[in-house]
Amino acid sequence: MTNSKTIKADLVPFTLNFAELVLSWIDSEKCYYDLCLGKGFPPPIDLVDSWQKEGVRSYLMYVQGSPAAYGEFWDRPFELAVEIAHLLVDPSRRSQGYGTRMVELMFEKACERTDIASVHLNLFVQSKAALNCYLKAGFELVGAANYATGLKMIRMLK
Picture 1 (tube, rainbow, N blue to C red):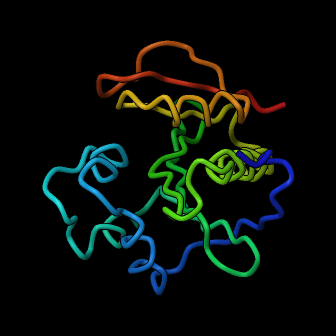
Picture 2 (picture 1 turned 90 degrees about the vertical axis):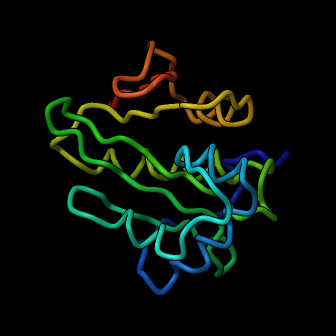
Picture 3 (picture 1 turned 30 degrees about the horizontal axis):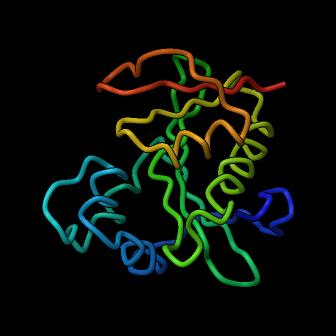
């Protein structure tokens, strides 16, 4: 596995012209379930489009000029937080540090905001890879998720 800090990457706002590409990264029934507790495979063609709504900011991570990962911020104003959701890595780049790099970049982006104090992640499936990714990116396990069975992880802004 690559050290995530050595991956040169840029975080850019997502645009709908990349929805089909991001959807193609959902390459199995397990991936679909792990990503969004989705049932039935393949996912609907408008799935990624349906995630784009008020209170959600979506991003792509670019590596060497091409998209490598996708993720969203969900505003959690009553918690003075944002939640990272729908984190998805191009299948050809999984288990190589790209997910961790995406989480690190998203955390850095969150640090630019003055209206939040923490970044949250929820892990709803038993995924050692996802848990390790979040831990490597500096998140701490704090207990159970608020709205579904799973684990809640937080990283405080400095």
